[in-house]
Length: 393
Image (tube, rainbow, N blue to C red; front, side, top):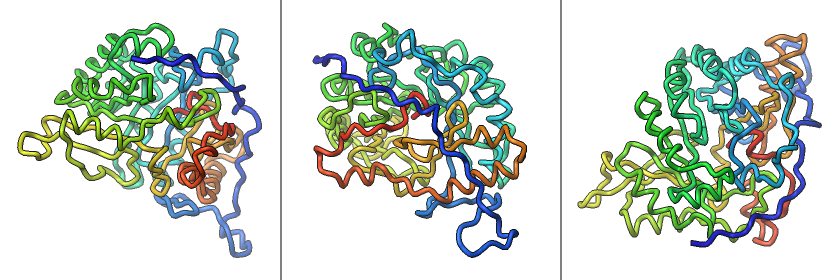
């Protein structure tokens, strides 16, 4: 086992300042010249590339109790790091109001993220408010949450009772020494596994477990992780180490391409390719094969998320809302759009829904696709981008 030294860190870009104002587009009723108009909420909203708005990811806190090197390295997020004051955060009522307008434009799924979302006090209250919303077809929303699992065992029942449907747990290995090295706060694997078991017991499923794979650090854990979760009902997904933000010292040579992950798995646990379960799904699905070489649902499945080597920008239908109300249109964006000033302004829901429409209709983001066209030496450019800890994964 090889664990590399801590990465060199880069000065953190403070995304909490300098957001673009959320400009309001004219409506057709104003008689303006032909061109760009804000769309009224009709359950469907497309960007410049024809991608619909279907998925909203909401960060509820910028704090986390882990210090993973690929997300919140301790060298930057130390005891003196200045987190957002409580007054800057969107209230639960403001989050729900914004979410309601996104749903009117066609959002069907809401994922709560962080930082670590379970650090936000009374999160079950927000979940209950969001669970009361309905899509334009009258269906309940798909309400999910991504967590590091550290607090899941004690909170799983309350989350389920509030209306949460599923959880995704980040877990980067089963070897305790490796996992503690990666979370950098000496947190044991056993406590995360306890949280996963508690979530299963209360019906928060199907549970997904996300493993970020870094060459030379935890890639030897790929097959053990698959063996551990095979047949348990938990869907394991392997994520290519991404150049999100500017603090993790990302290098292409530390990426284990998803194709290599599947090769390793297939050699130990034969796999069968599966169809995507929904439009815009980020993971490629593979089912475990039985002795006859056919997919066996009882054995379950794994997935790979390949944003570095196989960009899925063409189908991306996700928007991200930061904890203090900046809207980001790409995980790799460098600047957000200020919705907090709109939601706290005098214009009411009409301005809010107009702003959302204007921003999404002007969207042309496709960072991963463009990066793939660059030569290898230009791919790790060090350009400053929003941090994953700030807007969630």
